[in-house]
Image 1 (cartoon, one colour):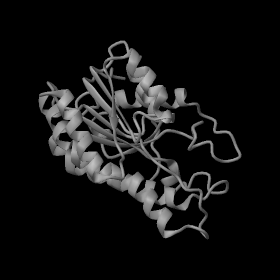
Image 2 (cartoon, one colour):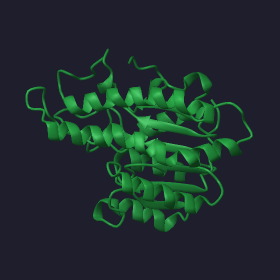
Image 3 (cartoon, one colour):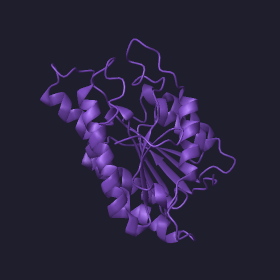
Image 4 (cartoon, one colour):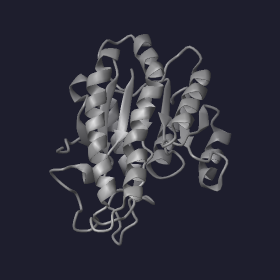
Length: 259
């Protein structure tokens, strides 16, 4: 396993759950990134209180206003990140922000389907487009010719709930719009891996496990994986990714998840 050495990272949906877990892990690294950008919808609100507390102790943490379903917000966030980075690029974009509507097949609606798809699938597409110049700059500035997350990468937070082969936990929760959005995100990841490979950017979809978060723990059963375990595992996976893994779908332990 290689060591993850990055100058900068942006995590979307960073004010709670897995996103906040990523921020904590990056800040606690022996060699932390010079810049940790934490994207959230309301940087000054109550839901971002933990991020605000961390930012008061860590000058390398910058909270960014970012609504991933709003193209104007995404462009403004990219401009702000670019200002902080100066002439350097962005090594790692973690598309973590996501929503779920607990609808069954019978009561799914156009409105909920559209909202979930816009946040979970279109958002990562637009973020990839907006941050591409900064990712390319990081790749161009790297001394290595091989793909890696220390060079430049997009990590899309997917779910085995979006695996068409597995249809994980169908008996317990249908969440049709969520499943469809994650299956589409997997295809987006594959497309990004093919389209951005020429720029030196690695792209992977990760399943974080069934995690004890507000989103993951909405049902009657307690999820088996803690945020700490999930994020720690995913960062081990991320640090070891290479050319052969770009465009793949892996879980938090590094195992291949079927499409």
